[in-house]
Amino acid sequence: MGSTDEHVEGNVVGDRILLTRSEEAKRPLVQRLNRIEGQVRGLRKMIEEDRYCLDEVQQINAMSAALREVALAIIAQHVAVGVRIAARVEGTEETAMDDVTRVLRAAMRLDG
Image (cartoon, rainbow, N blue to C red; front, top):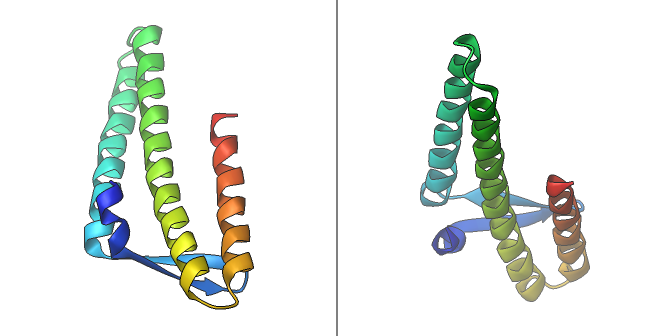
């Protein structure tokens, strides 16, 4: 997914970096979310059909892992843009790095 980073731009607005993604950069994220949506529907069907609990839990684990991958891709885009902004836009270095740090802190709580 890293190859789409050059198709992501951002601007510092207040104390945040707001991303603008091209359609090319959005596509892999949306595709992953569509697959996760299918997994959710599959889990709902498993529950409705009273499937074996271990199968249901394994489906939940797969969905959780898939969501973490989406989060990591979003974080990678945010960090790449934040570093580019900090390097090229005079006076935004501290704000950009503070925002990247805030996003990384939130990401660290994903596994908590």
